[in-house]
Amino acid sequence: MVIKELELKNFRNYSSLNLGFSHSINVIYGKNGYGKTNLLEAMFLCCVGKSFKAQKDAELIQYGKDSYKVKTKIADGICGSISVFYERNKSKYIEIDGVYIEKMRMLFGNLIGLMFSPESIRTVTDGPMYRRRLLDIALCQTNKEYYYDLMMYNRFCEEKGKLLLMGTGYDGLEMEVINENIAGFGAAIAVDRYNFVRELNEIAGKYYSYITDEKESVSMRYFPYIHSFNSAVGEKIAEGDGSDFSVEAVKEDFLRELNDERLIKREREFRKNLIGIQRDDIGMDLCGNSLRSFGSQGQKRSYAIAITLAEMDILKKKSGRTAVLFLDDVLSELDNARKSRIIEMTKNVQTFYTCTEKEMMNTGLAGGASINYIDVEKIR
Ligand SMILES: Nc1ncnc2c1ncn2[C@@H]1O[C@H](COP(=O)(O)OP(=O)(O)OP(=O)(O)O)[C@@H](O)[C@H]1O
Ligand SMILES: [Mg+2]
Image 1 (cartoon, rainbow, N blue to C red):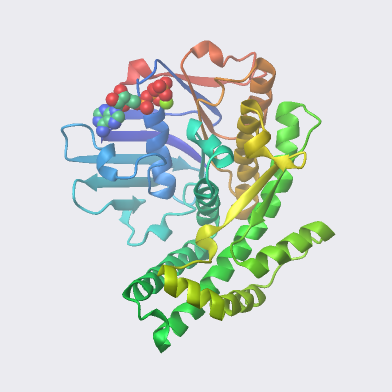
Image 2: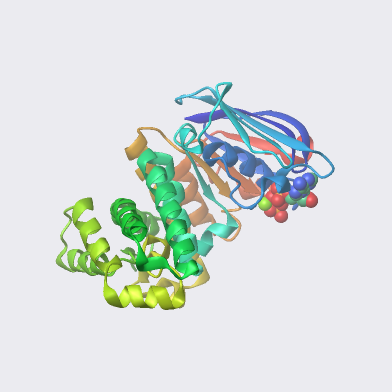
């Protein structure tokens, strides 16, 4: 799928914009603070319904205005257009082909996008929250059940949290029902995450070697916060066993842990949920040592890029469609050899690069591929 056109109204620094794109490489260049990232943010908003950097939609409205509108026109996809409209203090209004969608999950998969921004390196360098976010964004876009499971899981966790706070948590039938649901939805999510990370590990490892041209290997492993499932994952990896897990079996284990007397005692004491997929993580190793602690800046950055490219392959396999790639400032710290390898890998996909100088990305580096240059100063 490709984005043919982007229309903006009072979005960030754009009062009004109508811009067409090429099906392959688009390079948005211009000075710092001129609005390059804002364009990627607007397009990605149409993929997942949320900004990749702002917490609140109100931040996206142009200063002094009351609403924003973003519309993408799409080719080779399931739909022809997606519009997101937001008016201050009201709920967000999303349309697919001009028809209002009631549930956010109806948006996922219509325009599949992958974003690499300077923030993406946090997947490698920062806390587990960033790795869970990576899993959730990728899985929600390709697996409608995943989003539903996640929504339901969070809902039941919230209910459980309320009961625990009231201090009467474990005294009724209600908690039994809640735990049963937490185990069911949680197990489905954990198995999806396991499968995804297994695939991501394999492909990202290959991309990493290609980008860096280095001999060292990087690998990743899913660490579910369901103890018995975590041990089972460890055993499978150690034995090189590539077979799948059954959701039912993981659910049974999870439920057993949720009903464990010692856990119940601790949850009562702390008055909160102590185990579950909300505390999952992914471990990343560089030749057997933690990449996060021992990797250089360049190694971490290269692996973060490799992860994005691997996600692109997996999304394509799962959805049968090619994702649109948004690579914000990806080229800035890379030497020409690495730049050309990355461009080479992205030239058959619609890709949006941003950079400050047009020269950072030239046709020589792109192996002669045609590039659509967009001077952000001219479109503001
Ligand atoms: N709600 C808003 N209304 C108007 N302008 C905004 C709003 N939010 C951000 N801006 C402006 O957008 C600009 C930042 O845009 P953006 O982050 O896209 O720049 P950039 O070209 O990517 O810069 P860099 O090269 O530094 O990454 C700033 O000038 C900021 O003042
Ligand atoms: Mg930027």
